Length: 329
Ligand code: SF4
Ligand code: SF4
Image 1 (cartoon, helix red, strand yellow):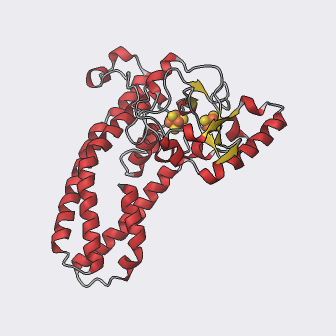
Image 2: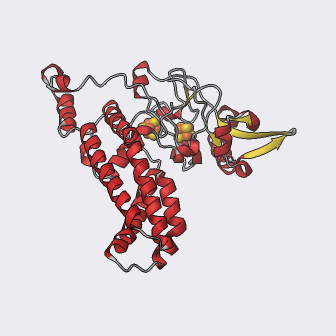
Image 3: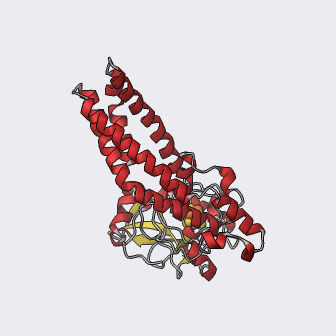
């Protein structure tokens, strides 16, 4: 919805700017539309940055046997050159896959022109291979969800990407090669914390030093907040667009304005309430004490359940969301 709203504003920004406002109400709408444009732009820009230093150990770099991360042809050439320099075998790191056998969502996300080639009459793409190994059992509860509520492709049987080093770093990144699917990916933990910070409910200081399982628990709570907020967000979104359209066309704005103000009030009130309960005022302090002190003496156990099997209903990034619905964690 954020993207949809931003796109609508983007398409109509000239009309909004051209419209002369002659009353307080029109001025209010004009300012609301412009503020929203800047705000949405900055949120979407933050979300577009898939960089992650949350320290989960690269769980999104573990893949099931059937598929992994596809590569565009330009990146493949860089990888070929890089592996040659290392004296490593290309086929140990990159394999060919049949384009037609990829799940539809993967095909949609793939830039066909720059990522596919034809070999013996069959359209193919390149993707990274996995290497031997599995994640530690203790990491399974850390598998995050993805931004649309679905499971992440990673599960307990997944194997690490061939480029993931033993100390869980990407050897390609270290060589300055960044496959676009990898740089675009953002998981639920990353997205929830980023948005909470962007909206001012959380700061870097609050999350500094928290280990990943705690960050995951915090972000899961925040993520549930987004899901609950959806119905208010939908109401807000509809009223916003309706008000914007009437404003641009010069129609009577009294009713849509009234509706928007009501929806906005409801949305903000509920957002504040839900975020407050997800990010309990003492929650972060509790966690920090929890990490530093004798667990059994802390009240956190009475107030909050043990950071636990928040098994990820993990999901994929929109642009990378090419997974079968049934993928299991
Ligand atoms: S994006 Fe999510 S799954 Fe990937 S490394 Fe960061 S926290 Fe881990
Ligand atoms: S190429 Fe690097 S970032 Fe991409 S999946 Fe492999 S290890 Fe992860």
